[in-house]
Length: 295
Image (cartoon, rainbow, N blue to C red; front, top):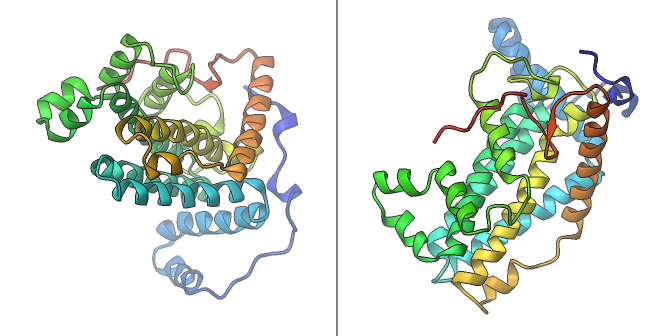
């Protein structure tokens, strides 16, 4: 399969050609490591160089502005949840989502979009949990205090999706939520099918086409949009009229703009993919025979 040439815009076309040189201790350490542990150093150096190049490329762009606003907002959401007696027990879920976002950002910058995708799978599970607590607040206590058998029966991603679908809110945040999770799970598990595009491969992605650059950020902005909606819903249900419930509804203009830009990139990618008759489902590139996720 030949990737559509119109999307093969290289980073070298978008940045200055001068070499970026720093005197940071980490760079010096990599230089020494290259002599003593060349195989290990090779990948660390590649990731470090790519991170520097991409930060130079993106530092004044809308994506970094959106990420800054997102992280600051999630930090504040975690704090107001901790300060609310009705929400404090699930504040750690927001903190975990923050860690996932930070992981995805680092992975996207260093050329590991698959790692970014796996981190967003975790955010999707948090989204499902929050939606179930919104639907039935008693389920929060059941999840927090139940034994392992109860959690496996009621709160695996598959069980949560089945429950939410049964009560009619399975697609509340996104009409493609079910197939999206299936695609993430198919990519996570070992299977014999080759990736449909280099950005969907495991490990380090050497390609610098725009999709490979943007895939991790597309994931972050989409899944954090859905996470934010779930945070608003659960705060309103568990602590209606509280300062926390009011705060989480705050406007995020930089995030919204970055979300729009990454969706534009995704739409462009899907349009190009449709021209070469590759299976595309619900705004997510899937393996043609993606299997149901494991519990």
